[in-house]
Length: 65
Image (tube, rainbow, N blue to C red; front, side):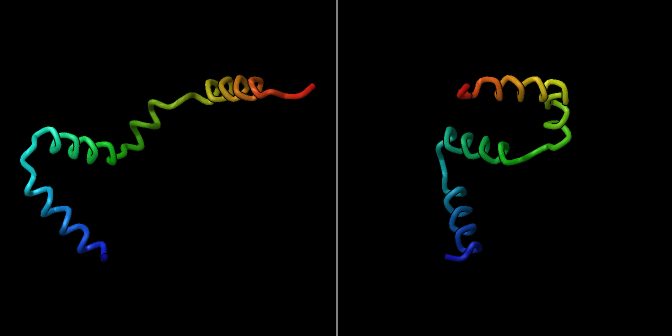
């Protein structure tokens, strides 16, 4: 099935929906797919935090001595 046909089929199905809970779930799914790089980057770790986490993870490996 072509992408265009799939899109049309989905749009028709969405237009026919009556359940507000299902519509809300679909809307939440749509919002989840929107990505704001600047926001995500601003909420990320600092280089020092990343380095500390990596050392913790490496030290947690079951190294054989």
